[in-house]
Image (cartoon, rainbow, N blue to C red; front, side):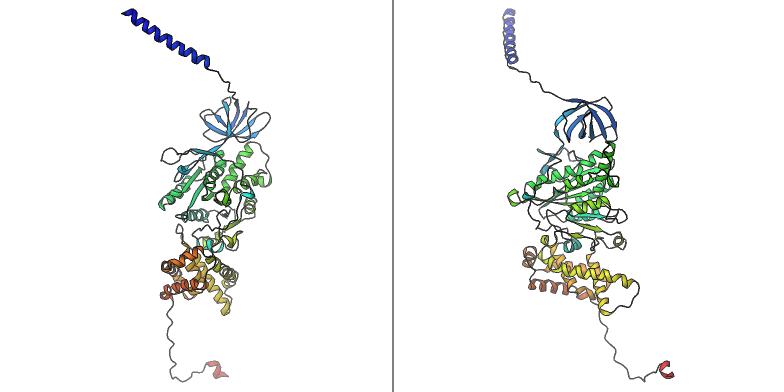
Length: 532
C-alpha cells in the first residue's frame, strides 16, 4: 500500500517537473534597460541629478518614496528637476529613475464635483478619483485653422459685465485689480451663473490661502455649483513645483471636455502666484533673470497657457474653452511688467478700481479702463440695443461728476446728466453671489435708458431696481425667448418690457405737492426797493 502511494506521488512530481521544464524552455528573458541617476544636491523644491543622459525636457522622473519630479533644466553634466511632492526625506546620493513619459493628469466626468491637486490626487473626503483617461499637462494650443469665431455669449450674471464688457464662449478675459477689490468674487459669480447653462467650470486656485480656498468651496457647494465644477487646488505651503504646474493641469482637464464638444469655463486664481512660483524655481535652477528681475521667458509661460483657450470649429465638435485669468496689481499700476504681458495676451480686461470699492460701488468695475475686444459680436441683441446709450451716458456722467464735487453751479442739462449717471451707477451695483437672469437684466437696463429711474429718490434706488427685477417675471414667455435668440430687439418687445418696468415703479415716484393758490395780500416791498 505504501509502495503504491509512493509511486503515485512520484508520478505527480515527474509530471509537474516536466511542465516546469517545458515552460522554462519556452521562456525567453527580456532585457529592459533602465536609466538610474543619483541626487547630487537638494534645495527648496528642486533637485540636481546626475547619471540620466537620455532624459528629455519635461520628462517625469521618480524619487524614493514615489515623489515625482519634472526634468526642467537638461544640461550636459546634470539635470535640474522640479520636485512635485514632499521632499523632506530626500538626500544627496538617493536613486532617481526615469519613467519615459511626460507629466500627465487624470481627466474625465469623474472629476466633476471633486477637489483635487495638480497630480489628480483627491483633496476632499469622497475617496479615489474615478478616471480612465490621462492627458499630458503641457499640450500644444489648437492651430488657427481649427478655431472658429467667438459669437456665443457667456453670461456672467453681472449687469455691468454682460451689458458693457461682454464675454464670449472661447474668449480670454483678464480680471485685474489691487488686493481685496473683489476679483475672485466676479469669477465665483460667473461660475454660479452657469447653472443650467450647459457650461462646465474648472476653478484653479494657485497658491491660495487654505481659508480662501475653503470659502470658495463652501460657496460653490452651498449654491449647488459643484455638480458642474472641478476644483484644482494648490495652497501657499505646497511645493513651488505644484503651484507652477497647477494651471496647466487644470487646462488639460478642461480641454478634455472641450474636445468632447462641451462649453467650458476655466478660472485661474491667480497668475501672480504662478509667476512668483516660476521665478522662485528659475532662480534656484540658476536660470538668468531678465527684465523686472523676472526670468526672461515669463511671457512664454503665460502665453502658451492662455492660447489653449479657444472655440473649436464645428467639424471638431464645436466645443469652447473660456479663460478668466486673474492678476493682482500693485498701487493700481496696470502698466507693470506682468499685467502688461497678460493684457497683450488676452482679448480684453475687466479692471477693478479700489476707489470704487471704497465708495461701496460693488462690483467695483471701472468701465473706462475695462474693455472686451470681442465686444458686441458675443452679445445678445437685447444687450446691444442698450449698451451704446448706456456707455455714453455713463462716460458723460463720470466726466461731469468731478466738476459737481467742487460745488460749481450747473445748468439744467448738466444736472440731468449727473442725476441720470447716478441712477446708472446705482443700478449696476449688485451683491455678491446673486447673479441676475437675462430678462431681469434687460428690464433694468431698458428702464435706465428710458430714464424711468430718474424720478426715483436716490435712497430708494435699491428697492426700485429690485421691484423692476421682480416684475421681469411678468414678461411673456415668447418675449423672453426672443430676448435669448432674436438678432434684433423689436420695438414691440421694447415697449412691452418698458411698460412692465414703468408699472412696477409707480410706487417709487415722488408725490408732487399741489401748488398753493396765491392769497390776496398786499405787496410787501423790500428794503432795497424802498431805498431806491
